[in-house]
Image 1 (cartoon, rainbow, N blue to C red):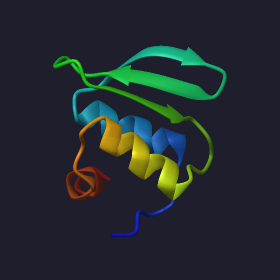
Image 2 (image 1 turned 90 degrees about the vertical axis):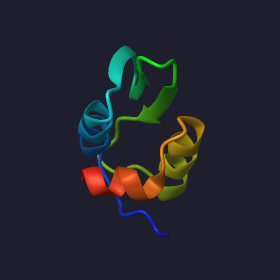
Image 3 (image 1 turned 45 degrees about the vertical axis):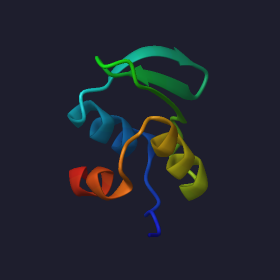
Image 4 (image 1 turned 180 degrees about the horizontal axis):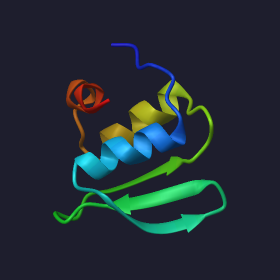
Length: 71
């Protein structure tokens, strides 16, 4: 499945809906953590590369289809 081009703000809001909270921000990268211990780091850019986002979601154990439903 091909991910749409999303902004950092869109990804941030979607992850908040999944229960993630921001724990650190340095430069243009945001680190978020879930209460069950999962973490995700992604660039807070105007447009996030599809492969970068796909890898970050995989690392955080988030199903792509479920993520897309949140948008």
